Length: 191
Image 1: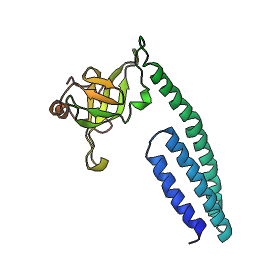
Image 2: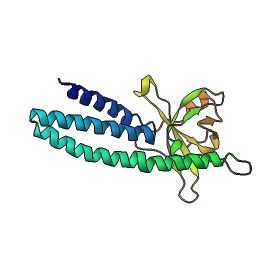
Image 3: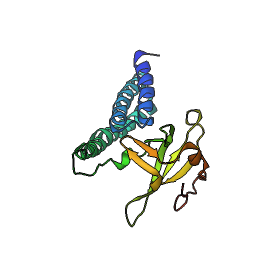
Image 4: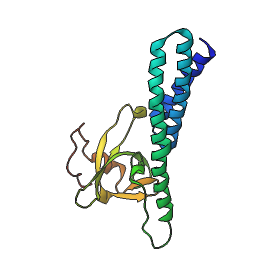
C-alpha cells in the first residue's frame, strides 16, 4: 500500500475513535477534521488507481465532514463554552450555582462514602416544573460490556461540581430495582 493509503487508513481509525468516544464538542469536531484528511487521502488513492466508487464515496464523505466540523467545532463548541461561562459566573457570591444539563450525562456517581457507583446515562424532567424527577445510573462492569440501570430519585442526589453524590450507600443503591430495557418507570422508587 502506498504512503497515501497508509495515511488514509490511520487517519480514518483515529478519527473514528475521536468521534465515537464522545469526549466533548472539540474532540468530536477535530475528529471530523481528521476524517476530512482521510477523505482527501482516500480520494487521491481512488483517483490514482482508477477507483471511481472510492472517489465518489469520499467526495460525499467530505461534505459530511464539513457539516460535522461546522456543527461540532462551530455550533456545539459555542454552546459548550457559553454553558461553561455561566457555570463560572455562578461561582460568585449571592448567585445560585449552575451546571450545564449536558454535563449531567456521563457524570460520575459516588455513594455516600465517596466510592464510585457508576455514571449518569439519563435524567428525566417533569414537564410542569422542569425539575429533575430522577436520574438513571449505570453501574458498568467489564469495560462497559455489562451494566445494570437503576433509577435514583432526585431527593437522594447531591450535585457536587463534576460528580454526583448519592445520599445512600452502595447496598441501598444495589437494592433499587434494575430498570428493564426500554421500559422505564414514571417515577423512581424511594431509596
